[in-house]
Length: 270
Image (cartoon, rainbow, N blue to C red):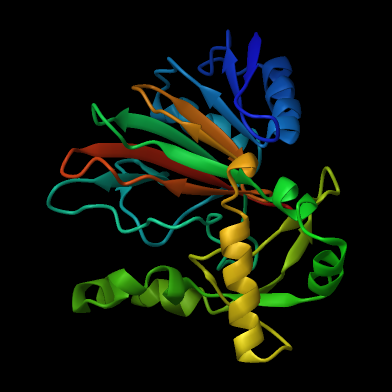
């Protein structure tokens, strides 16, 4: 196995492993590397849907997503597809499904169709972003909670009658929730910024204007290049990331080309 770091604070490309194998020692290595690097990149992994699901269950219970189509016979695997007729609508930095009371531990994304040019994804380390805050800012944020809202993240889809009808059950099942603005990672015990532009609507207990100002600062702060890495997809890539301490952003610079990825999210036990 060969490990190539993508950046000083986040990301590593892993070579020499076959993810089709169901090997205890291999997955122990992967778990250790994930805690160290936060996002792992594997190339040339033509894994089956069965292996994709099995890999996810190695880390926890699979968490379905209510808003996307799924692979036939594999309701755990959601399809993230962008075409000229239906381009992707998600463009901002975010952590997956923080509108849930129990957001995912991690996500495993597998490439199927990749445009010839563009379509990269970026990740940012929320532990590094936290460490980059001043002592006064860390102290101020330490006891605050913020609201995360499903409807805020899918407001564009919900702006249409078709979208409201399709997601009406998801809205009922996912009322707004509260999470700490600064969250402690349950394994590393490192503090992480835990608000994101897609789902976080306000900070509780302070005036609206202050909440907006602090959130806007944090949303910009986490984009600092020194906290981020960028991955250029190719066919049959698998990317695994820790959703508790990272945010990511798709770069939608490939319209009208076709891009298709398949994703499984894993329920957090913490």
